[in-house]
Length: 112
Image (tube, rainbow, N blue to C red; front, side, top):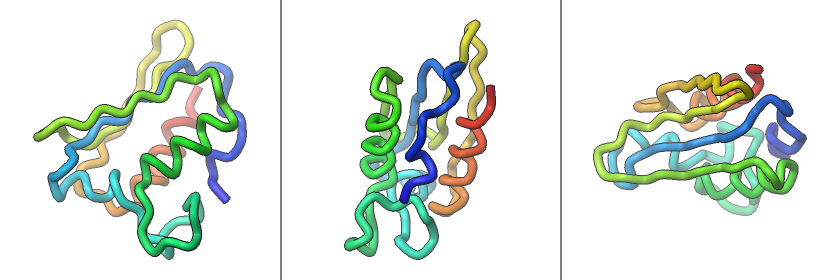
């Protein structure tokens, strides 16, 4: 079950995930090991795309929340959260393991 399988703070206005589709530094953002995380969408796969699996959970429980995914060559892996009154926070995800990525994203989204 995803740790994102609940409504997020009403103060959260937007999530933007940026990463490179081929760089090793973005690998933890793109892929999640089944054993390293409790937030895998499909437990039948040994590897699941982090973005794809978490996007469906977030949108299911927060259908009106914009979740933007931007992949571009050379882009450092990071996630941005925009809160009410234009407050924006972000965390860098380059060179982190998949479990570290999940932890950082969960911490960021719990801010308000």
